[in-house]
Structure formats: C-alpha cells, structure tokens
Amino acid sequence: MSFSIAELFAQHSTDKFDLHEQHLNNQMVRVLKTIGYDRHYKKAVGQYLYDQEGTEYLDLLSGFGVFAVGRNHPTIVSALQETLTLELPNLVQLDVSVLSGLLAQEILKTTPENTNKMFFCNSGTEAVEAAIKFARYTTKREKIVFCEHGYHGLTMGALSLNGENIFREGFGPLLPGCSAIPFNDLPALEAALSNNDVAAFIVEPIQGKGVNLPDDNYLPEVQRLCKKYGTLFVADEVQTGLGRTGKFWAIEHWGVEPDMICMAKALSGGFVPVGGVAITQKIMDTVYNRMDRAVVHGSTFSKNNMAMAAGLATLHVLEQEKLVENSAKVGGDIISSLNAMSSQYEFLKEARGKGMMIAIEFQAPKSLTLKAAWAMLEAANKGLFCQMITIPLFKEHHILTQVAGHGMNVVKLLPPLTLTQKDRDHIINSFDKAIADTHQPFGSIWDLGKNLAGHALKGKKGS
Image (cartoon, rainbow, N blue to C red; front, side, top):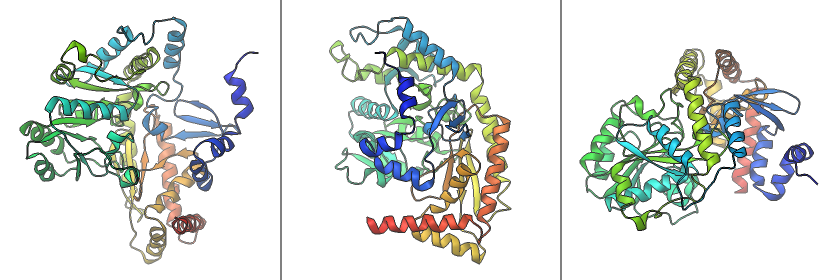
C-alpha cells in the first residue's frame, strides 16, 4: 500500500481543530475560534492564502516573517526538489559540505566587512544561544545585557534575554548574569557596561514587539560604547534581516558593524528551518581555537543539504526579484498612506516602521462618547481595541494581521516582500474602512467590542 501525504491531507483537512484539541495545544484552538480565525486553508501562493471555499486572503503575517519571498515560491520548490533527487551525501558529520560553504559565502557578501565567518543552526533562538556562548567564551565574562520589551527566543538562554515577562513567568530560574535596560537609552547602556564586566549587549535594530525604532544616533553610539568597554555588540536580525526593513540588514540604516549578527526566519524560504550567526574572525578563532575544540558547539541538523539549498535559493530570489527594493518602496507607501489618515481618525495615533516591518498604533480618543467606549475595552484587557481592527480586517476584508504584542494597542504588519501596488491599495482601503467603523460608537463593531470585553473579563475571573 502506497503512502501519500496528498491523500492524508484530503482525508483529514477539516479534522485539524479536533486533532489539535486532542493531541496538541487546545488553547490555541480556543483562541482561533473565539476571534473567528478558524478557517480551513487549502492552498498558499505568494502573499495569498486560500480556504476550502476558494476565498483569497492577503497574508500580512507571513508566518511571523518567515515567508519574505512569499509562500511556495517556485524557484525554492525547484531547488528543494532537485536537491532531493541528487542523492547527495548529507550530514556525514566527519566531513564538511559544499552547500553550507556556498551559503556561508553568499551570506557574508551581504554583511559588514568585519563579519567574515558563519555559524549555522536551525532557528533564531539557537542563533541567540550560540551568540551567548560565543560572547562568554571570547570575552571570558559572564554578563549579558538586553533591552526591555526585546524578544530573542524561547529556549532557556534566549528566554533569559526576553524582555517580556509573560514569556518568562514560571520558567525560572533563568540564566544568571542577564540584565535588562530600556531600549534606546544610551545612559542606561553606559551605566550597565561601565564596570567592564559585560560579555555582550544584544539588541534588535528595530524591536519586533511594538515595532519600536531607535533614535538615529542610538546604534552608532551602542557600537562606540561596546568597543569602549570591551563588550561584544550583537545585532538580533532574526526578524529584521533579509530585506524586511527595506535594506538587506536593518543595521544598514545606521551604518554599524556588530560583532555578531543573528539570522533565521526568512533565510528558510519558508520550507526548511535554518538559522545562523555571522561573526568576526576573532570570535571564530577564539571559540574554535584548537583541533579538539572543532566540535565544541554545533547542531546536528544545522548544515543539512535541504536547509542550505533553501537558503541559497532564497538569496537568489531576493536578488533577482529585487525584493529588498520592493520592501522599501511599497512598505514606505503603506506607512505614509496610513499616516495621512491620522488627522481623520481620533483612534489612529501613527503608522511607523521601515520597509515592510510596520506598526499601526492606536490611542485614547478625545471625544467623550468614544473615550467611554475605549475605557470599557481597556478596563477589560489592555490592548483589546486592536482586535476591533484585526477581526474585521480578516472577516470582512480577508486580510490576516496580528497584534504587535501583549497589552499594547498596536497592529503589526510583516507581509511577504512580494506585495504589489494592488495589494497596497487593498491594505489602505481596508484599514480606512475598519478604522472608520470604530468611530461609530453605536455601530455593530462595538457589539464585537462588548463581546471581546466579556470574554476578557471571564478569562480574568477564571484565572
């Protein structure tokens, strides 16, 4: 009897919620059903998802930034199919592979000149774990400094550098020697580094939770202070890298050269998990300083041929289709068009970001009627207003978005870099309609708001 994934998918395509409730995270199923996101997707192409009725959805989440080149890109599919048919030696371990060498070479063409070595792993959180170990061994120091509200992953080392308490709560004790400072605060950074005992300062060039941008002088000064106090400067570009912000690396906006650059997500092409850290020669030579230390840090599946092929194909697509340039142009158009609406709508504070890493922030209104409605939502659960934007965007306009973080009134867009002008127009028109509806205090959208508040209050009582 033959084994067929296509047959399995066809037989069970509508069983996924039952399967997850029985065998996986049933709370995630509850969330999807509560907010009306419980669709049965059948197909995905580029920036679009299709459900079993054939309805098209514009995906502005892209798997948390994984699908920068779009879903099921034919060039990457072809590269993976070809790799599977070649019967290449894979993960010999007591060997080095051609494809990992080629991918390292291509990545390092894009990074600052000071980073000329690569370490590969399977994910962004593994890249951060590697950076922690490399920093400690290179500097012979223990302490790691990170930023409040930063996000660097959920394994224990990376979690120890996570600036959001909701992810850390109950999982301690965490890695010792890790301390948080405010983002974009140079005096706080200098105070943290001034004892000359910090191994590394790790920072997202643009914070993912909330899409918080630094002042123009922040990262250049970070680099100067790190050099002054002998601390390694680590840029976490897991989300911001590979064209997301309209530059290949977000650090290019500020012209800085970190000692390490963590990467993952988009490098996979959306198919095979792959992460990495670009590092300096000094770090490589210090950590791997003798033959008996050649395997002192690694990852079993990290340089597998499928992952390396996916990475090579992704870099090819980014260059050939000029997706970094498209990210800058279309993303900039979206930000400016949304900001042009701020004078029309009391709830809309601003749109911000770079390229296709975009935040739309909402605020308390001034008019009394709207202020009372806002207060009702905030009392139930801080940040609940955003669901009154994201849910109608999904149900009425077939646009998939996300809230940027816990307890904040920020909607975040991380779309594929393949968005067209037609997509841009659809996004702007849909946001315009969704935001306008919230300014009708007795309209149907506020029935949704009351229901959301009710669910939130029940959840609080239950906990």
